[in-house]
Length: 82
Image (cartoon, rainbow, N blue to C red; front, side, top):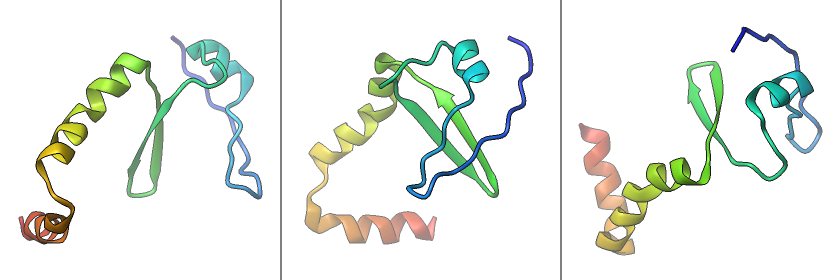
């Protein structure tokens, strides 16, 4: 895959259209999921498939089964102290 640089525009509803050349290069289809990574002032959008999404969210789903809602605040405070 070659390097592509495109400029997009954010709509009044916060939506961004992915330029057609990039959609074609990544074979992105309507309804396909993408993952957003934010670090400082950099946003990365990564193409994912349903298997990848399941793999990424499995630890969150597993943790949800083990953590009670009443424990969430205490857990957040413990993790922030680390």
